[in-house]
Amino acid sequence: MTRKRPHSVPGPHTAAAAAAFLNAQEITTTDCRGCGAEVSGVNGRYACGVCGWTNHWSEGHNKLPGAEEDPDART
Image 1: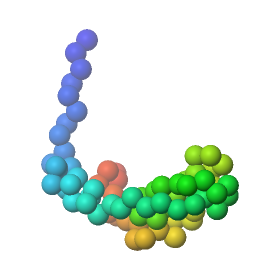
Image 2: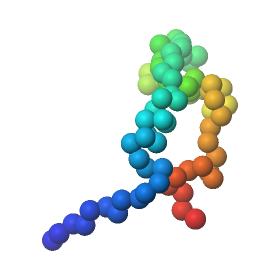
Image 3: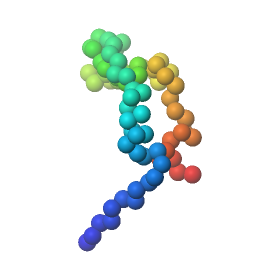
Image 4: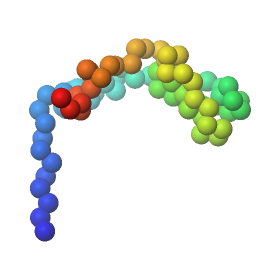
């Protein structure tokens, strides 16, 4: 059995787009509100691996992209 290679999708799936996305991300750290453990997250969004606490998505440092901005969305 031979496997076909996945179809390469042109457009936003490029090294430059990936680099731009990663440059916009910031690793942040805080204390867990549930158990006090130190937790790290991306752009102010956290999830504690010790007790399971997560902060609300709206507490992040930037606006989350909408569904219309999802490059993998099916139309």
